[in-house]
Image (cartoon, rainbow, N blue to C red; front, side, top):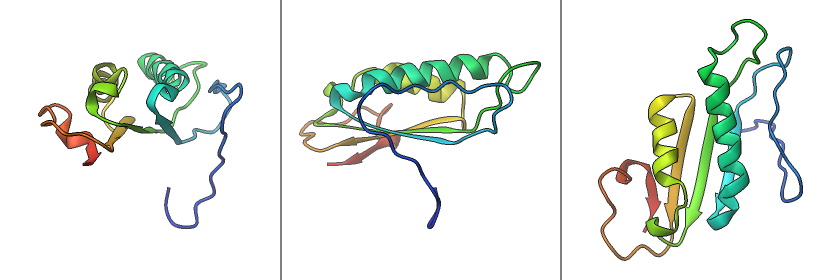
Length: 119
């Protein structure tokens, strides 16, 4: 998003991402904290599956980008972090993530360092 961009927010309840072939591509910003990552991780897996089917080919939906912001006390509480890093590596520029830790006391592993903000 940029300054003055219009965004839609949804908090709690039943939510899903199910783009249809005729839909315009959308860029997703997913925000999670702690175990709240569960439904958003499912959405990321769905996006990865759709990207794997060669975006826009045939009767497939066109996809924008997906950016995940995920916060936890420390890196050990970041669920699915290895899987998320794998998705970012498999779909560079299409799926990205920024992890935020609030109470990390130990050294952060080199693999996560480029994606970590906070203490």
